[in-house]
Each structure stands twice: as structure tokens, then as C-alpha cells.
Image 1 (spheres, one colour):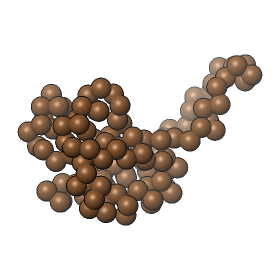
Image 2 (cartoon, rainbow, N blue to C red):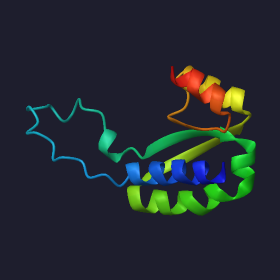
Image 3 (cartoon, one colour):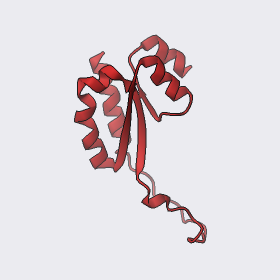
Length: 108
């Protein structure tokens, strides 16, 4: 189980390190009406279990993740059912839980 959590967190970390292709030439945009999205900090909402939060793993991994990607991670530590519900409702970007059968059912 611990290996699965570490593997998932490593995947999360590596996903932030993937190089993006350069953007295509943008169409002419009136900058006065464009939102200032470039200046807004990126935040990722991670719904996880309290046991993962209490393990100290996130305290170890997330500072490096943020430093390397510029993406802040907001951790919501709840029970597995609540974390899955947050994901189902679109209120979390990433789920980190440990109930295999429920995870599979969620993904289907």
C-alpha cells in the first residue's frame, strides 16, 4: 500500500514536470479586456485521506513539487468517501485515497 501511495505521488510530481509544447501564435486580443490569468497563481486541490496527511509524506513532497512547478497544492484531508465525493463533484483536481474497490468504482 505504501508503495502505491509513493508511486502515485511520484506520478503527480512528474506530471508537473512535463514540458508543454510552445503555444501557437495567439490571435490578436485586446489586452485591456483579457483577464490577468498569467499573473494568477496556479493552485491544485488535492483531496486525500487524513492518514496520508498525518503520515508526513505530503509535507515532504509538496514543497519540492511547488518549487519545481510553481503550482501550489491545497490539501483537503478527509475520509476516503468524502475525498471521492469531492472528486465526483468536481471540487478536487487530484484524489489520493486507499480503498481499491471504491477507487475502481469511481473510475468506472
